Every structure is written in C-alpha cells, then in structure tokens.
Length: 358
Ligand SMILES: Cc1cc2nc3c(=O)[nH]c(=O)nc-3n(C[C@H](O)[C@H](O)[C@H](O)COP(=O)(O)OP(=O)(O)OC[C@H]3O[C@@H](n4cnc5c(N)ncnc54)[C@H](O)[C@@H]3O)c2cc1C
Image (cartoon, rainbow, N blue to C red; front, side, top):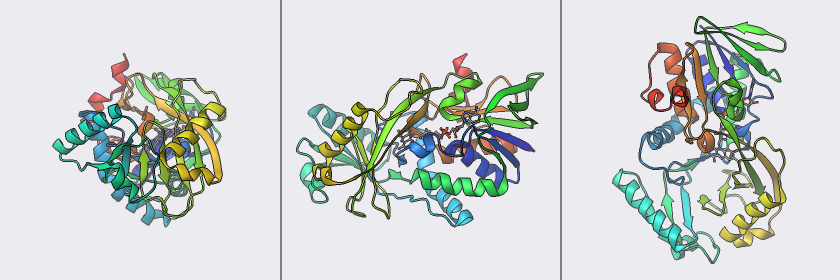
C-alpha cells in the first residue's frame, strides 16, 4: 500500500512513523522543511488537566494520548537513539484572583471525581520550591501532566522518517485529484503522484484542502534559567513557563490571536509574555532572553480536531489540533494508522469527523 502524507509536522510525522513500522510505503510532501510549522513553535506541554478541559470525548482523547505518551517516546528514542526531553514534571496551574481560584478548585473536584490526580497547593506550599509573584493565591498541582521538548521530538521523528520514507521538502501540494469519489493522486508544481491513501496533516494551512481549518497565531519567548532550578511547568492566565529538562532554557507561552498568517513578534506580544514571566517568578527578570518566535495553531470553529475520512474515500484528515497537537500526536498516529492498515474505525472518528462541517 502507498500512503501519501501532506504536511510533515508532528502529526504527519507521527502517522508516518507508525505506518512505516507497519511496513507501509510512505511519501511525505511538505511545503517547507519537515517539522518547522506549529510543531517547532509549540511549548510541548502535555496538559489535558491544566488546560481545564471539560468532561467528554475531547478530554478522553487527550487523556488517552497522555497515557500512551511514555510508550510512544520510548519507542521513538529506542528506534533513533535520540532523546526527546519527555519529562513528567507535573504542571502547577496558578490562580491570580479569587475567581480563578474558585474555578481551579472546581476543576480539582471534577478531576478527582473522574479518578484523576489533582491537589490544591497554598501559596506558602509553592514557595517552598520557588519564590513566586505576590499576586499568586495558590494553585492546582496536576502531577500527571507532563512536557516533551517538541523540537527534539520532531527532530527524532524526522530522522526516522527520512531514513524510511520518500520525503519531498519545499514541495507544496497544490491539488488533490480524485476519481469516482476516491482519492487518486496529489499534484505539486513538479510532480503528480498517485497513491492508495492520502492523509491531510497540513496544520494551519489545511484550509486549502476544503476543510474549515484556520490559523490562530501564538507568540513565544525563552529565557536562560539555571538547569533544574525550576522543576515543573507553571501555567496560568498570565503565561505558562516551561523549564526544559537537562538544559538552561525556560520557554514562555503564549499569546493567542485571530489575525490570519501575520508574521513577526510584536511589541505587545513580547510585553505580555515577559509580564507573565515576572508576575509568576519575579526574580527571573534578571535573566537573558534567548529567543522570540511565533507560529500558527491549526484551529476549527468548535476548537476540536478533524479526524477520519470525509466524503472522498481514502482521503483522511488528521488536522485541526489547535492548542493540543503535541499532546495529541500519539493518539492521532495510533488511530489513523490503524484505520489505514486494518480499516479499524476509532470511536473518535464519529465525533471528530470532517463531515460535521457540512
Ligand atoms: C505558540 C504555540 C504554542 C503551542 N503549545 C502547545 C503545547 O504546549 N502543547 C500542545 O500539545 N500543543 C501546543 N501547540 C499546538 C501544536 O503546536 C499544534 O497543534 C501541532 O503542532 C499541530 O501539528 P501539525 O503537524 O498539524 O501542524 P504543523 O506542525 O504546522 O505542520 C503542518 C505541516 O504542513 C506543511 N504544509 C502546509 N501546507 C502544505 C501543503 N500545501 N503541501 C505540503 N505541506 C504543507 C507545513 O509546512 C507544516 O510543516 C502550540 C501551538 C502554538 C502555535
């Protein structure tokens, strides 16, 4: 079987990785370098609880993916010899107001009712670990939320996929050709390539392929930090702070704006991130800035992903992962590859079907 994947971000690469391991021939087209879209830009949080997701299919999908993350990482690291910075460091979600405190405490209750670990920490408890900003009232500790260094993950996947698949970089797919209601081929400027199945995983650019996915811009920053000085992710409405495992980098995220593809880091975005940093851990204002960057989340109107086949047979969508595409890479790869390999329909295809937009 020949599978063509449009877009080699974390989603396309993870699907390719699983398909290759099932001995399926894979070809990937990317309009750019592999893995340099949203997947490069992200914070890498694996945070279904810190995101405060409501009970339902989306939370379940996210929790399933969080559960299989360690095994996914173990396989990739052993297949490539590369490490990915996966770290179950836990995420502390801070409250900066009474209203936020009340909401977070309600979240703790409902997560506990679902059997998930969650615990309220008073500000004094948090200060035993690190000195925090004076407005912080306390926070929820979610010990099972985690992080991965998304850039390292993408590099590992890229390394594996380039060894085992045919990869066309800087070769945008311009058109998808169909025949009798079935996928037939993809067309780029230089090639027309036929295949048995095509996966659309073109991230925030997936709107080109007849699906209402649009970009939501996010700006990010990183500062120096002493290695392991900060031992978990701090998440709040002001900013999230992600210390990387084993090296001196604290990632700060993120703004969220509906401005289309509008390139660049803005003054206002940078001020927001740095204020979020110093409101949370004030003494870090002395530290050097390492990098500013930005990118585009693949969003949909209902903020849910698009998974499975639509009206065209053998044309499969795996996109629209919005704020949680790193978290959702393992489960997406799992259910899409199983469908391609064994026509095994995931229960999630009904809920996240592309047909819901019709
Ligand atoms: C600022 C920010 C912070 C984030 N933080 C987190 C986080 O902490 N945790 C989390 O889980 N998620 C996070 N996300 C979301 C996550 O990054 C995305 O959901 C995820 O990376 C989407 O992966 P993807 O492979 O679908 O898209 P991308 O990584 O964007 O990949 C899509 C690929 O498709 C290619 N492409 C596009 N059009 C074409 C075409 N016509 N032909 C060929 N190739 C094409 C692009 O070049 C690109 O390489 C964040 C996102 C942003 C922007």
